Image 1 (tube, one colour):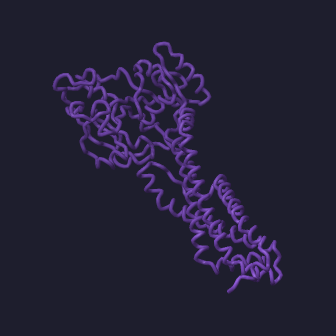
Image 2 (image 1 turned 60 degrees about the horizontal axis):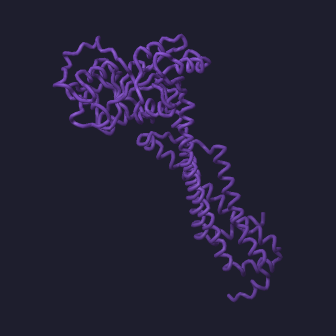
Image 3 (image 1 turned 60 degrees about the vertical axis):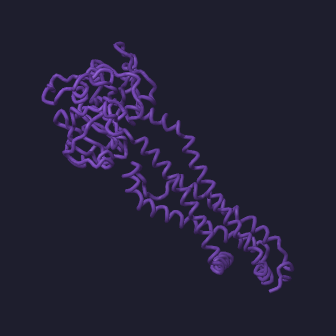
Amino acid sequence: MAILRLALQSLRNRKATALLTIFTVAVSVALLIGVERVRTQAKESFANTISGTDLIVGARSGQVNLLLYSVFRIGNATNNIDWKSVEDVKNHPSVAWSIPISLGDSHRGFRVVGTTDDYFKYYRYGQKQLLSFKEGKPFDGLFDTVIGSEVAKKLGYQLGDEIVIAHGLADKSFARHDNLPFKVTGILAPTGTPVDRSVHVSLPAIEAIHIGWESGARMGPGVKPEDIDPDSLQPEQITAVLLGLKSRIQTFALQRTINEYKQEPLTAIMPGIALHELWGMMSVAEQALLVVSGFVVVAGLMGMLSSLLTSLNERRREMAILRGMGARPAHIFFLLISEALFLTLLGIIAGVTVLLIMINLAAPFVLSQYGLQLSAAFLSQHEWMLLGIVLVAGFLVGVLPALRAYRQSLSDGMTIRI
């Protein structure tokens, strides 16, 4: 205890240097735990992009490709699937609900999703959370649209505004369906998923806007809204369909049945497995973040080592006096080790405290801007392990100056002039 009190008193006498060292360690610890938390939270948010969906069915392709365009709205389908095939899958005895999805159009850089009312009833994200409306309601009329929160925010849309959908992903004047504008009837609450960046319309509306179009070009002036019969607009093909089953036990059996469907080549994937595979493809970048933050911690500890070694020469007389008062070389060794541990421990406490405060303050902004849900929960088991490694590293950093002090002789310290 006497050594510990002496170490604390010594740090108080070198307050400025000690505070600077603590600050360096705190910054490196905050970055290490911050990167680890962002990494794990990003992984959880990624895995929670879609939940409660047992199978996703699309044209024959790889499961990652099917996941990318059906859930993340990235890329395009290799082919569409016939509506008859969708009806056959939908009517399978093990299917509880289905959500058809038609992609291919866009609005000012945001993907347009053609679907049905079941999208708002059954689509889930996160911990099986249903979609909710910030304003308005689901589409009712043929040319009603429901937009995601990010679409509304970035484009400044409100209920009642009119929007024009473009054919394909290039929002060019010649590709716009400007003869059939849509009216915003609903704005979804933020989800932190691609839903926020989507414009939702009905499947009949997708068919209506393509009347008079051939090979991506409008043939003639185009039809008027009053000339369209909504009851006659039956989709011939769609992009994909999301399925929820009555029992998950039936998932593998239905997946095999769909993959062996004889009328046309189909692929059925389980979203959880596809998400895991997709995240695995990004593991290099994930580990790189952790390595960079680890190097920052090493730099912080090297700064502490430099501070201890620099102050050691200035404290040779202090060590000599302690030896003269009966302190053994082992006492000098543990004094330096205790100082290094105190500096590391205080740096860890300061870094974690600042990090949790920053997460609390920044979480709403990060969620609204980047769709990433940051948790301000206390440290996880893995984070405790990382802090334990930092503390052990701080101990090892203190060994070198402690050994140097241990080896200094009493006469070496007493010959220093004051």
